[in-house]
Length: 307
Image (tube, rainbow, N blue to C red; front, side):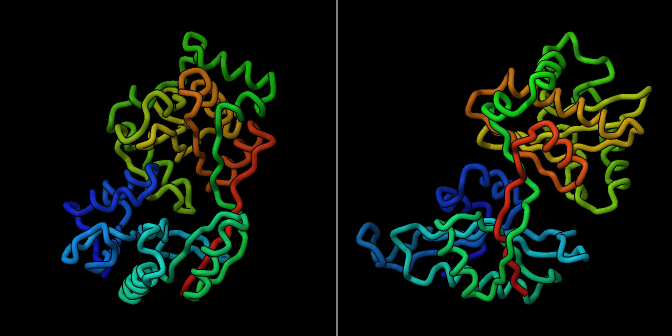
């Protein structure tokens, strides 16, 4: 049995969801389908009790690249069935419900990403059985660790980053977004969204307080914001960079200063186990990240399409 999981039911399904995804589910940004066990399926539960056995997380996304076009798609983020309830058809029931949703949805189709590696081959086989077709693509994400900072930032860049991050040496034009008024922040985000015609930033919040103030910085020229780096703090304590953008003629040089400052601050102030995930949907941000971390490459995945 499959249900749309309501707010008052979500706690029963959260144990089946990875920690880094729970915030998206709780906020309602991602939708949740729940698979319930049938009564009497295991000895651990009374015959009249149904329990959370599986979960499927998805969202509706606009501006997904497909060939030369940008289309609206349903993005499947997570499909999981508790081990004790596998081989009972629950995953197929969840997928059938998602397929039915697509029929009444303006989205063109469904996409899902599966990591490379033989340990994920069975997952690809399952989705292929549902009609997904796969190709290998570069996922616009890069995960940075403390070890990456130690190993991959060149000595001259590391020295500059740490000098910037030390505080007093920080350029007076570089300020935390928490120092901007909410109205000025909102106007700056709107302007940068207008300039970025791909629509990649369209879903970003325009509320200043939704970002990590200690890591999210802007460069000010006069009274105007010219460049910005924005990070979200995830539920598990890690960071997610969601914007690295400029309106300045200084362009890449200014953005590189921002990125080096953020890298240095993270290196000096965050726990050893904390990671930073970069979203690199804009080509220039990807080029800058690869420049700062020359041996690090964006994640490559198997991207599946279902129409």
